[in-house]
Image (cartoon, rainbow, N blue to C red; front, side, top):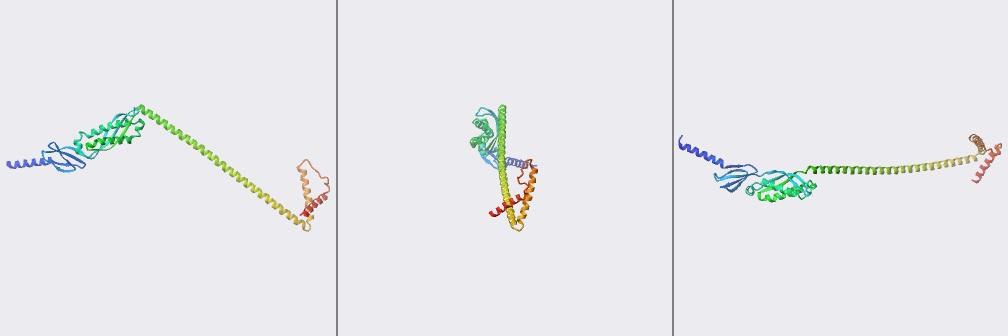
Length: 308
């Protein structure tokens, strides 16, 4: 193999190597910062790019996706001078790769340190009892503070989340005792409310029972009075009809004799009963004059007929 051919192959190989070295493929959601002779030249988005050999180089590579940074636990002092351990998570995203490259040396470290500083300031303005309630307020204040500073870094702070707030053991025991007392208080209130409602229900039941009983007694008495009135009316009507029938029978032939016989029988029967039911016997003066007594009764009957 002659020398010119070898030189051509070597040259071709060098060209291929240079092309391979100067060709850059940028993945999706990535940006590369290209410097030419140490000075910013351009930002490369996703795709295939060719750089100037020996002049251009990729100085920085940034992901444009959302990142999450774990903020280490730190000691904070609340407004009421209680020491608590607080940690969190910060979510941010590079929106300008040039600023991220030349605006700050390490935006992750800067965001983490600023988040810790802002968190200590926020916790120091509230009491311990409110630190658990004001998480949303703390999160928003940290995001607002970091995002304002991160504008020059080409970084957008999306959100911040407090993970844990750990008070000292003595405070935890006091809080547990307070929670226990609060639960017992609520239980006692619930029991008293239940007893109160039970008493009210029993009283209402007794009142309704008394009302129903009185209504029933009232209706019973009304029914009894109506029954007695109906009974008296029925007896009176029957008596009247009986007397009317007797009057008609007395006016018929033989009626007087039948009435005399009936009166005599009634007299004898009642006189016999009187002797059986009492130790004291009142004897009429004319006990032997049965006919006279019957005549007297008939005279009274005739007197009644005449008055009619």
